Image (cartoon, rainbow, N blue to C red; front, side, top):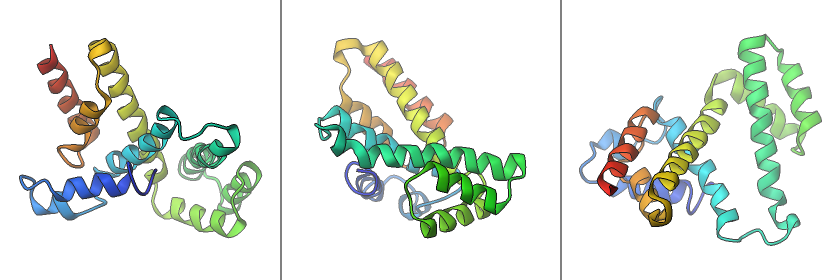
Length: 177
């Protein structure tokens, strides 16, 4: 759900069909301002599986929950490295103690967090913003809230800085009343 549909594959395919966007916004994947949007959408998309009933048994939800734990630990590690002065080994040890990933994957990922400050945090910030916007829309629209319309608003302008995404959703909500 994160990498394919409704995640990255859907979001990027729709983005590339937006003829009114300049090429750098249609075809460039990861720019500084769009990481929170792109990865936030993919994390948000993962949770849609819960809504549509993909995880009927706790065991079928284990993979999603494992990744949710991984991402929570990434927030600690990214902050630990860049704000608290953790060593590479401290970060590796923390991930090894608190996730179910392999040591090789942990070391590769910790090296990524060292080299790309804030990238791991951007995922969660983007997801939280999209969930906040959805909650606002659900509250404001009540029973007329349509999940598909909301997703259309989120995806129809391509990657946006989160403040512009919020403006887009607010405009849509104003038109609904």
